[in-house]
Length: 569
Image (cartoon, rainbow, N blue to C red):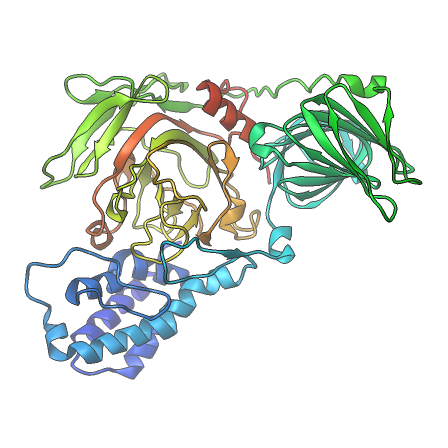
């Protein structure tokens, strides 16, 4: 939803009148705060288009808006004389506008986060990781897994759980058939009915009865299945668990090893179980007993890989070579058999631009020096709230500055709420939220920020999955829509701001580009272009599973267009 034209005009008028006045008009100040409080779109317009706190920084060197939360964004100093309004009453107006930000905007900005139970704790020191408080209430409403395959599955009460269904923490009861559940951590559990499984977290589940096979890749090491009598913790393996109706648990290790802990007695036992070994934990004793490998658990043929009747397009820029005109070819697949090469471009008045081919992870890669150069394609991008996946390799130099944070990939219309889709690293330049240097996916008006600083001069594989879904289907929570993976591992979040994804691909929208920041002009002045190296850039018109992302990271081999699982809410 965009801001009502009358409200937009009133917003512009109030800001203009306030900054041009020689005295503080409390009524106008209150009116402005009221508009911002009542309308998310007004807040987006205020932050993305007006850039009030950015202007303060330009006009008053290093002026701090508030003592604890928001600081000026660090734009370069203007060469022209300060505006008239600052000359009139600089100190008074700084205090008045600081009061507006501190009392009104601070409350508004963080209302969304406070409404959730995972609340970013804003702190002054950008060198310290931003801690995130978590609670059971917040975790209970977040999706954590997806059904990625099913074979003749019949659920209790005929519940319609089809392939692609996203799942929140809950109990599942499978009366017959087989189902593969892929957790966001990357662990995949095949459940064979009759069986009951509770999804506890991205790294844990409880098998109440029945049989389950767990395939746990390296990024998900530590995944745990609890039973009434045992705790089975993966140490990098494939294992099977069979829980009887009485609660006795048989555990078989098919690859690698697991740690098995007894949940019985005052002195619970624990041991490591290796490949081709099996143990039993009974309901009536704490001992972990060795047993012969049960025939029914020794081998479990995985459910045949998902095959769709529809093929999902994807686009691929390997950056292996460019021609004399600075063109980098695209070699993905789409039904129209069109290609969308990337062309070397530069911003107006840019000097010293360098974009060149360098050694990459697979073959060659493209390096940009952050001085105004970027790559642009004729691909409109993926529209509205349709699921998508972006995968690529990135190497960010240790000396990368905040102005070089954007963008690894971007497209859309920044002027519309939710209208752009952009991936960069978190600069903390305009808003002091999240870990500086961590991966950041943003839309116009919202974002999610990872936990790990990527500015170490090393190659990192990035996977961004957008699951789509309406506001109602995703409970209005951006964390239910976006998953970020770094080097194959699910990236924890250090900050987020809710916002609706509605990516625009109209004639007025920007097409897919690499290295360019999409934002309103005032914010663009705070940033240059991306500084670093990109390799093997994939854009899928669907949501990949964690295992598909990990295979892409390891082998650079994308899934077949018919193997991409749909998303259902």
